Length: 225
Image (cartoon, rainbow, N blue to C red):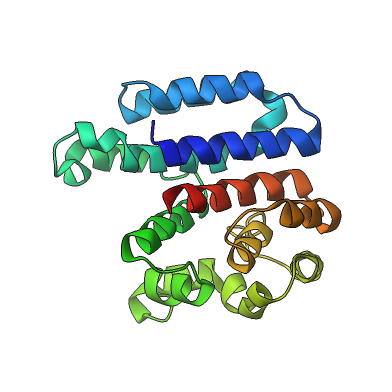
């Protein structure tokens, strides 16, 4: 299992448990075990889903943790496969079978990897324009998916209170409905700290989820540094 992914997974579940009062130890141990197994990706997905099926009180985290499973594959598992595996028929079949899984958080995690490869600090404008290419005519699907972030970029320089307050006043597209707050808070403060977590706990209308997702992103960023 990739150590950066493991750090993010554990930090997220620990923070989620602290806010929700739900015991995450068994889920954490089971997920680490699955992530660490030497299995094909679809086999891991099957065991991953079995773990979440056994812990229904954490269901809201299933798809963002699927993103972590995918990042773990790209960072760790793929090293055991042939160099052109991502162009193979097998991987194309896997993509088709999992096309409805995960969230847009995967793109942000991939962007963080690129930031550290290029030794630059994560920045919302850079993420939108240089990584997602939302201003390019060929990438208008991304523009529509991320339009809520594009039109509210100023919030990444405001405060957790402002981000959460603004979230309550706008209608968000499905892709960003749950991710808007943790995405914006990450670009506001890419390094997780207790102050940010406490502010999310105070101001977020969906504090358990927002803290869990922010913790994934921020701790993955810190671990990758």
